[in-house]
Amino acid sequence: MEFFGISQTEWLGYIAMFTVVISFLMKSIKTLRIVNSLGCLLFVFYGFLLNPISLPIVLTNTAILCVNLYYVLFKKT
Image 1: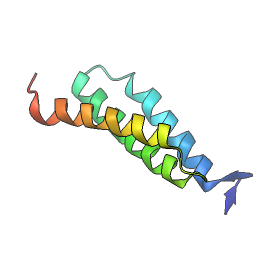
Image 2: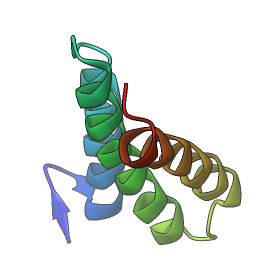
Image 3: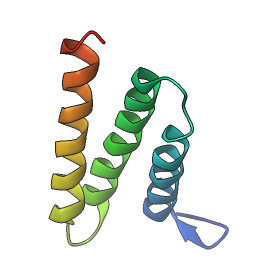
Image 4: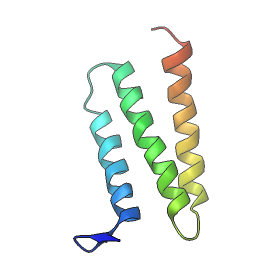
């Protein structure tokens, strides 16, 4: 299915990109990490939906997601 000539997978990529960019506008580092984590998670889904699966997208964003979660959950700063 397409919206405005753009596939659902591609829309997911655009939403992920927008979320990551918006995360850098946050004043609080914790908020930045939470919003950035959402963007990374969306990029992981996007990477899996590509045909063929894009391991560089999946692995990079999984690693960033893990770093963000570590700081949000375990580092109280």
